Length: 333
Image (cartoon, rainbow, N blue to C red; front, side):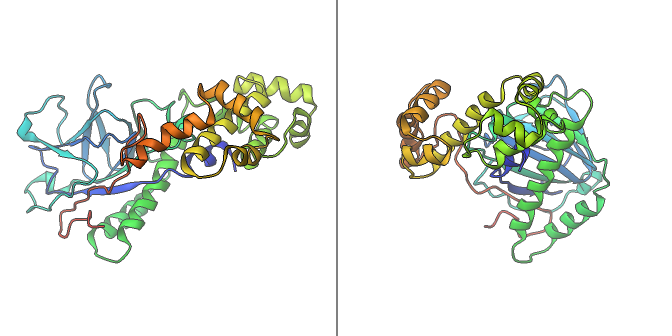
């Protein structure tokens, strides 16, 4: 497993489809659910993304995918406008089910938008998603027309498991879209992402992500990479921006934060799983990186959940809306 795999492993979509009944020239969808990440893929037609951090509306056509960072609301419109009257906007958010309406006439009835909201609660994916721009548009360079046709077919039917199929395909599309974005010339990919292709640093990075609890040393990581300790230390720092063991500690503490928030394991058990012989050394490293002790972090992340509220700065997972031009609406879960 490489860092890209491990950072996106637990990121899951809650998908929706918006059809011709809600996408006409006189209407626009305003996504207001506060999702940290939203993927939009036109299956038919085209539209414009209007985001508060973008200078102008961005056109998205069939064959392109757009990833929008939240939690700020953004608009998907059939027209390249930056301002709308209240009666022209239709707010869409998680938990809301759009009722299909009679299709409009004209070119707009060919517009079908597939969207997936990602309510990322864990800290691990933030190491990747935090470097993305507010809006990114990636063209389809691999001819995914057959996949779009399949998605369109799934949306038009009522077969069991349709929502699961939709969500999992959105997950696949998100991974491909972000990867293609980072591979573009001039994209500001994380330094570790570029380093994955390096013959010296790549094996060491994969080893740390495959088994973060192993008692890694500079010597054992160098042996995995097939180079000397000096060579690995120098090359790793040049490409990643920090020494190998510093990177390892930061990655372990990221995993620790999620384990403390999401499991009932004791601090000592988490420490052992992440390669620490005792809870004292683990707690010191955790506080140095996160600013609070492991116990305090658990309290801060668990207390809101007990009351039904999300942890600070996070958004609760809810059921996403869905609608298509043919009833019943896709949002029925």
